[in-house]
Length: 113
Length: 112
Image 1 (cartoon, rainbow over the protein chains, first blue to last red):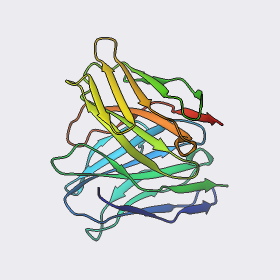
Image 2: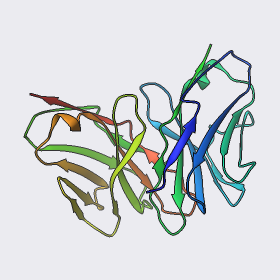
Image 3: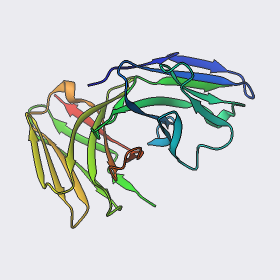
């Protein structure tokens, strides 16, 4: 089972500020995903990433979101101008090639004030 | 679009079996998963079933799939206090980068 860590565990920001959430997978050759979970609601798919490009994205993943893997290790989700409704838990997930299971990180709680 | 439905709460007595149910709408679903989320924690993959199977057993966990009715269940035998959590049903079409579609989760409450 691939190990996934996320930083920070909790991020507080002001509305309109940019935030970068980080995911650090331990293994190579992975698909990467971001999901979010607004308090009390279901986990929602945002985007998947493979071979240094976006593979799929949901309608939630609009122009204020971007993803990249700048150093071949960390996988980041950037929110350019945060809104109050962006407050949620953000989960990174990874999947090994030739396997279908997705393994989730512990999440980053984003609070937008 | 795809949808996954679960009842929100299930209360069982310690030692009894818990059965958590899920229905889904996407007939292209290839893999169906059960994840567990304890308070303040991430999502732990418990088990999964491939759509060409109708049952899978893994220690205390039994997954049943009725593909015709698009109904999935998770049975936890001999429920313990440590099983108290939210259980999420999720499905995917199994494509390379396919995102998972989750249900809202079932809160499993264990009574002593």
